[in-house]
Amino acid sequence: MDLSELSQCIESYMAEYSKYYLFPYIHGDEKHSKLDNIAEVISENTPEVKWEREVRIAGRVMALRIHGALAFVDLINEGYRIQLYLTKDILKESYDWFTDNVRRGDIVWAKGKLFRTKRGELSINVSHYKLLSKSLIALQHTWIGIEDPELRYRKRYLDLVLNRESFEVLKTRFNILKEIRLWMYQRGFYEADTPIIQPVYGGAAANPFRTYVNALTEEWYLRIAPELYLKRLLVGGFSKVFEVAKVFRNEDIDVTHHPEFTMMEAYIAYADYEDMMELAEELLYSIAIRLVGSSTIRYPVDIERCGRSVIDEMDYEVIEELLEYTLWSYSGFKKKRDVSKSDLDELRKDPVKYLYRVIGEPRLYVELDLKPPYPRVKLLELLRKHLDIDPEAAPDEHLVKLLMEKQVVLRGGYNRDIALVKLFEHYIEKSLVKPVFVIDYPRGSSPLAKPHRADPRLVERFELFVGGMEIANGYTEQNNPYEQYVAFKDQEERRKLGDIEAQEADYDFVEALCVGMPPAGGIGIGIDRLIMLFTGKTSIKEVIPFPMVKKGFK
Image (tube, one colour):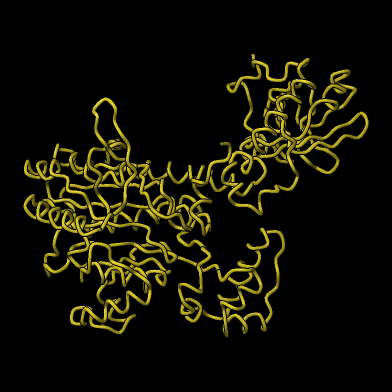
């Protein structure tokens, strides 16, 4: 709908309905405190148990079936559906007004006694109703935008109304956020709130969004991470802090990246990266138990990107079960299909070709067990195993050649430590399907981490991978002000050489370290990717309530 169509819609409403009061105030039984919860009404009224009182509910009309002096209405609220039963015998002349004026999409309030129809469907025999809000846009029975993801994301409100799956994904998101906060509170963390607009951005390697503060006549930045401010709280005397933070990075948009995203960062004084790994695996396990009742979840991994080894490691019976589940899922959970021996043989022979043929993309659901402990694997060992190189002795020319094969350019000039991490990111991380911690990164790649106690060429850093995605990043925090000062100076040099993502030096933070920060461990967890795991979504836009798309109305 463009602006002219919107204007026409409003004008048509004025012409047809202006004589009616279609957006009334609410009173008495119509208020939220007097309404019954549809989910509770449904769950507590089994064929054996019946309420002996009237119920009052409100919601959106999603289906309307009129049979003369009898009408059936499907009413939806917070994802739950209940049927309204309206008769002319009870409602008299107001029945005709309902059938003449109420349409799919309208929001109504109704009161009446519960009963079950001859087919056994729980229904409300409506004695009173009220139209609370008129939908001026006719809702399709099939959401036309489902073939146009950009339209779905731009008009998310309409997507939520018409697509039950989208509603359930966001409900899961909000429940996960609640569980994370409760889990952290129970372990003695304070939830902090740090500045979103900062004079110096830091805490990650990223290009920031810039803004201007008129009152200060200075250019400031939207934060790329809350890290440096949370660590200032450690300096100030807090021992356990966390923040569920919106952060902003002016980067590309793809299936796992979004310029505005949500992360949780947490810091513990008198801890190190081993403690933060334990925090991560225990948190994921707790969410799985609370959300699905099991440590095992299923996620559709990209076989083309992660490699066929994920299939080769499975037993025949497991592959059969997961393929059946994959086909069922990609049918919208509407129709289960029996998997034949020829299906399994074709899958094992050429999984990418087979999956493209049957579902249109090379994804297969796999089972991921989130029960701790997760393996710890050194980054240099992964490079040695997957690229068949000695990362400590391989010539720089060979590393550059491998980077060029993936069209990777190191802005700011060649740096061996950064090159090794880039090789890992582009050649290996997509293959890490089962939960695993990759640990002990080259020192030059992590300016905020403390050098490894056993090998100063490395830092005590880890990244957690699940389903081929990085879910968390953490390290033993650098608390030596001199070492942090030198690392910031190195970052400044890289910025001068063209690395726009090199970290900007925050000398106020260095001064804070001079006051004294206790030894600490820190972690950042990507909330959106975590929600992708638990909802089986393969695009980050699906789990963000209002993702970034080009403007609609201009």
